[in-house]
Length: 368
Image (cartoon, rainbow, N blue to C red; front, top):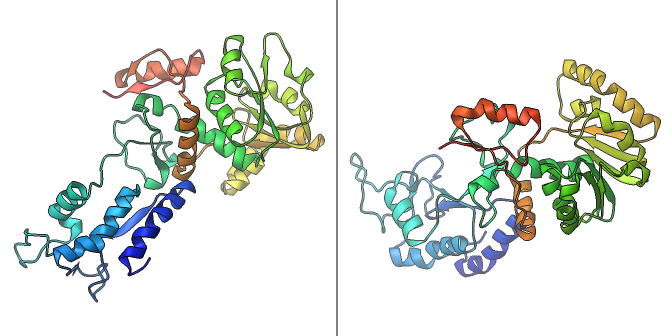
């Protein structure tokens, strides 16, 4: 950024906060500070040759400001700080670079400067990482976000999949704008519980259908219209809606399509993938043909009414999850967790419960 430590200290809080407010993880590099050695620390280990007091006044002060400003990560460099280090490489009698130094990382960065390790994070795992139950998983940091403040892991675990589905559906598939209208069929379930406050936070007018017992809860969450599916047919009351999100499947398709305005979009989470879905995801030719055939009926029905049918499958995205986390905190969204408790040994029982569809919230498996 600059060689002027005073200027850097003034600017860094704005840079860090600006990045985070726009969904970026702020990373500082390279600790304990480079630029004092003509050699490239990417090729050979180098040294920060400042006297300790000078380092504290310059590089140390800058890293302290970054930490105090909430920087998300700090990258260690292949750089030593001889004025601080006592530990030496046995063979070369040189101080270890930060990438290998317990003194620099544990004692100085974490101990004295206070950079905290072990942030509680959550994620919707990337597609390449799903398919099994495990206690630990290694994933790209681009997929994660810090958990909402004050939430435990059990509660937070129920958020990312549903929330990212809602966010990507509304902002990417539907491309909805503030002031427009959206209807969510079967919206009183776990999807609607998170999708509704996200849609409201994005400035949309929201209508949903659902069961009687959830009506007051969703009205208090800001739903503009709530239709009890046992007493009211939403298609008899709604028309010219900008967007529909379908959570019920093909049996509701014609009713959902009928309430859309000309040019409106229907996004299904349940019905069938189609050609548009395959093309946007750059699937190989044979999958494009397969999905084109699978979704042809729905594409044709929508096209005949000058409307559009979409299908989606959620992907991991840490930057979007950071934005969602703020909405969760601001609206105090607490997802419903099913009352049944399962261990890893009971994973098949958990899967059967989900397949039956008679749950009262997200189904979790406790790993310990």
